[in-house]
Amino acid sequence: MALDGFDFRSAFARHKPTPNDIWIRSVLNRYRAAGISFLRDGGDRFGAGLRASQLAPEYGIDYLSPAFPICREGHYGTFIGKAYRDMEEYRALIHEVRELGGGFIKIMISGIMDFNHFGAITSHPLPYAEIREMVHIAHDQGFSVMAHANGARLIEDAVRAGVDSVEHGAYMDDDAVCAIAAAKIAWVPTVVTIANLIGEGRYPDEVLRPLFELHMENIRRCASLGGIIACGSDAGAYRV
Image (cartoon, rainbow, N blue to C red; front, side, top):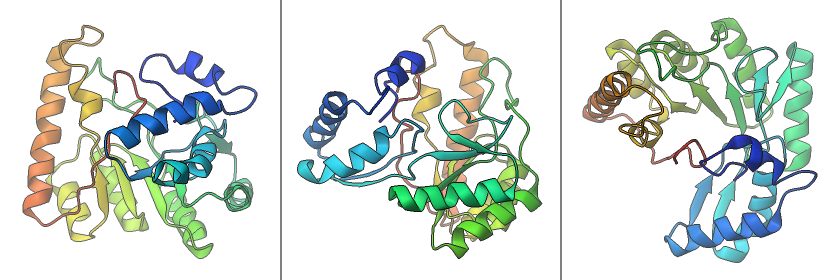
């Protein structure tokens, strides 16, 4: 809700100093016109998603927001989320989500795909022990956990830590696919974030096409194993 698919800086400016109701209502109206009745937002530090969750019932939409994504200071996610330096600060952010009325916790445990280099992911992933502690704290407070995660070994770590959903999940190998399918953890592959870039000219197609094909093959493999694959677009990302 805080993004617009074009330029994140101007999109964020739209919601300063307070969420822009005119914009939010226009987006909700487009979702209603498309026949969408349930939305799970990724959160933002500007309050746009939370405001949308308050307005959404007027549009016949059940709308869940984590309030804001939570990320480790110095790692991917600070542009849109709130950062912690230690577990005490992380616990405080969990409390803030509860106070704001967030419906679940979103944690950022990896970077994103480097669309210029096949196989590369921006930012260092979080260590397993930290992910496990984050999930434990959130679950202990009664929240489910959405994990922004890319990379095969990191996704295996996320599964072992007990996350409730994995968003994106790029560059999984068969071990990671088998792990996420066996654990019955919802995977939201957001294929359109890759597909919409092909032929657009911003990034090399020789990187995008094999990434897209790998992602699709992993979806087919996960489905064949009885995994839970959820529909999600990462709406608001570039060209989405």
